[in-house]
Image 1 (cartoon, rainbow, N blue to C red):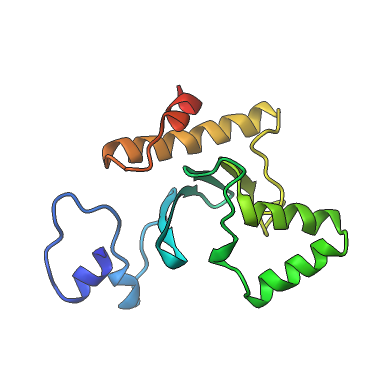
Image 2: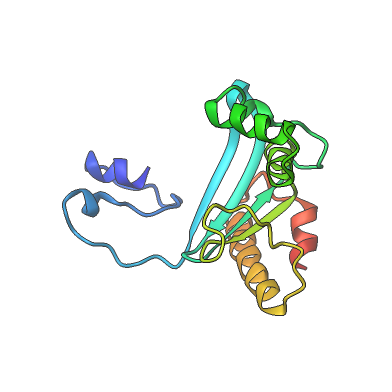
Length: 165
């Protein structure tokens, strides 16, 4: 939204989140960002599935506020070529694709991926006991929680507060 407002030369509301990329459209460079926060609230058929994520150059943390590991959310990608192919491989008994298919169908409450070693985000590091990884997870959680509290995000849950607290 900030970019669109700059394009039409309109003022930004005082409470607006985000940064304008208008100068990039004009051929200028922008200062590098430390992180980006992304929000999703609805998928196809107006299904409410709030997902929040914090992405840095090396990692992404995803918080699926709605996930209980039982709620099927496949319909967001259902019947796409990629979804059909993934199900086909899973049905052939490939353990990697079976796990990936389950993740896309049900998700988990939290996900954390390292892009340097896993650019396709296939290995969820959230439960890894490595203290260095856990510190990075905590940093990403805190960035997300701070933003959710500041914006009074409707997806803020007791579960996330307990994870940080």
